[in-house]
Image 1 (cartoon, helix red, strand yellow):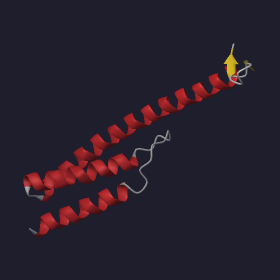
Image 2 (image 1 turned 180 degrees about the vertical axis):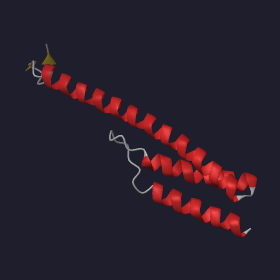
Image 3 (image 1 turned 120 degrees about the vertical axis):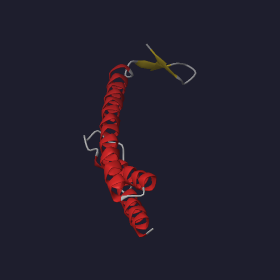
Length: 109
């Protein structure tokens, strides 16, 4: 039971530390997701096998899965940022052509 408590405490610390800097950004940094995956994998592996080896294997597998999820999220964030930048540039280029009608509203060409 002592080992299980240690594994649970380590997983709780890893999960808590991993969520501190969780923010979506296009910076190619997947450390948060890797730490969360490793902590969760270690917790699940330790609970399922009741051994330190199971926790270690679960931690490694969870870290690899979390890392791939993090990189996937970064690619999606980069695509989203690029689309938003394109929309801003499109609006800036095309929204200058308007006139104000008799009713006081903008009418675009």
